[in-house]
Length: 348
Image (cartoon, rainbow, N blue to C red; front, side):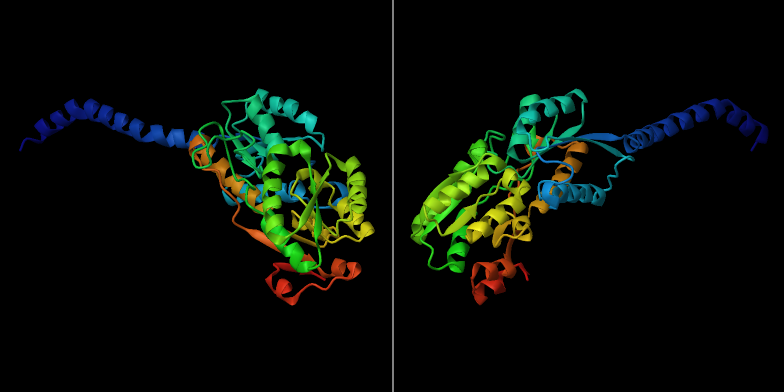
């Protein structure tokens, strides 16, 4: 073998081999560079809520501080850290629902990657503001009836997320009657400003009431200023128990409702545990913070390329029965032992 010939061939092939190696390295480096660029991207999330960043009456509302904390924890569990790989634009209506359309429009102008909207009113405002930016709704009562989605299994548009839609009223009335066996007339507090959700709940309530042999008195309250009048009407009609439907307005004024019920000495069933923590008698409801944690999962999937229209709307799977023995004692009630054994939490 002629070493000079091999050396000559090596020199002739050298530039070609170098070119081939360079091309190969560029092919490998391209996706790595793309991954690095993707990894370094800071996603912008819009957060739209009718509540406030700090809850009134020093209560941790499931739609306010407690829900927000659960959402943030859900993001952290999925590897998202504010100020590092995500930036969150918060918009709170502070209980003034008429501000929601303008706040939603602000988020659209900021060109956020996804909007997280709390309850029906904020979700409708977000949907009316954009048909292109993905929207993750949290705890809307009736996403079908309110027109947020066309189908629960395949929403089809730019809106999806975990809902609070479930048949609650029957179980709530059943538990209330078990607690107050002699009750014959139950007042039902609802918010006509949230008509789609409450219409569904009222239908469930009327069906359940007939099955339990109960009469129903409807009480309207669109805001805190109407609560006193609603309780006065209940007293005039001699309702002996109260069912407070799930609504963000009622959640934000849980202590006020508990105080009014205590003043009238009426046993009440509520739509979130926070009412019981505020002094109410009992609640049976979905775990709302869990829905906020689930919302973080939707955000993660969308940021990774999933289309909201392909992500099914989830319904709640976790429910809690919470009872206050302290309030029961103040009302002169004895909670049946069978009910206490089924409770998820008993407040002494």
